[in-house]
Image: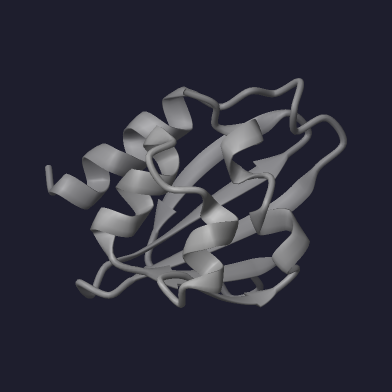
Length: 104
């Protein structure tokens, strides 16, 4: 299993269905190292897919270190976005909820 797979598996294992109540969204993650993953949240369920989704709600581009730092709380996601470490397209406000949906 790659390091990216491990990070995404860990993230999905922390999914908080209460925080995602009523959410229907697809988060596309394009990693600068070349891998792509997407997380689908629908009806209180969270699933992980590898590759590119054809219709993501929000697309986030970053390197693996940035993702790990944001998901562990070492780096604030909005700060990373403002510093240019994360690039986002689509429903950017949805991206701000990542640490609520996948708490530490």
